[in-house]
Structures are given as structure tokens and as C-alpha cells.
Length: 79
Image (cartoon, rainbow, N blue to C red; front, side):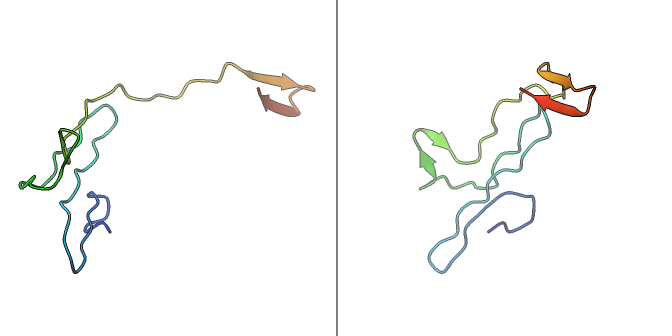
């Protein structure tokens, strides 16, 4: 259950509370690091929970090259 909408994910129940995961960044930006300080049991496969990933290029829309007009434009088909 997210403790704050849009601000990461965590689990809180009668047994334990997980660290809050990091916020997502914008297009091509890094997400923020987790608010968790104690990585005691939150390390898996040599990685630390909530570390930001590398930023990537922004995704921009492009016209599909496989669109064909058929029957005078009455049928728009993507192959």
C-alpha cells in the first residue's frame, strides 16, 4: 500500500514495515533515492533497494510507418 499516492510503495502490517520505494523521475530523469537508511535486510543480489536507475532519453511520438490508407481512407489499418 502506498503511504502517499504517487510517492512510492511500501508494505506496513502487524509484522513489519518495508522501506518506502523511491519516487519516479520524469522522462529521461533519475528517480529519487529511497528514504530507507537501514539496508539491513533490504539488499538483494548485491543491489540496494531504492537506488535510482540511469536516466534515459525522452520517448517522443512518431508516426507509424506501417499505416496504410485503404478504400479511399474509409479503412485505416496498421499492419
